[in-house]
Amino acid sequence: PEPVRKVAAGGASSFAVSVNGRVYSWGSSEFGELGHEDMNEDRDGHADELLPRLVQVLLQECITAVVAGPMYSLALAADGAMYAWGFGMDGQLGRAEAAGSCLNWMPERVAIEGVCGMAAGQAHSLAVVRDGRTFGWGSGRTCALGLELDEDDNGDAVDQTTPWEYPTLRGLC
Image (cartoon, rainbow, N blue to C red; front, side, top):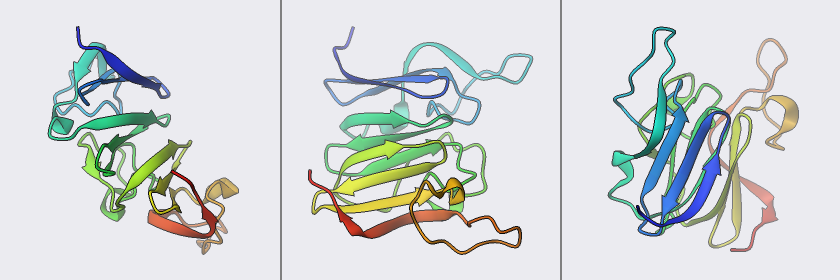
């Protein structure tokens, strides 16, 4: 067995990060939140992974941490790169092209450099970079982002689909 450095749990998913920077995932992957392309669905359409399984796509990176929202996941690499995958309907993956998509199994890089801290909310994500800048993106509903966002025709705040810098916040890493 490979020694584990950190663990994380989302809505119905679990993760382990090994001392060698490898990510293992197991649990439910209805929206691709485990990071595996070849999931077998049961007769009800649920894709589950019973045992910890290596996330192959992240093997080229030395991952230091994983956090999980209820239906999506984020990973932090030693070089400060950040990856996101899973449910992206509300922009929480930080990539405009993934917004509006339910299934994004492939961990892809978020356009933000030097990340040293991250968090996954219900439908939004946050990150702090090494120079102290703090960013947020995802669902604009319920004021969770703390941004003054434009409203759609129904009066709901629009989603922030790419990282947005908070001008009044400075983090420490």
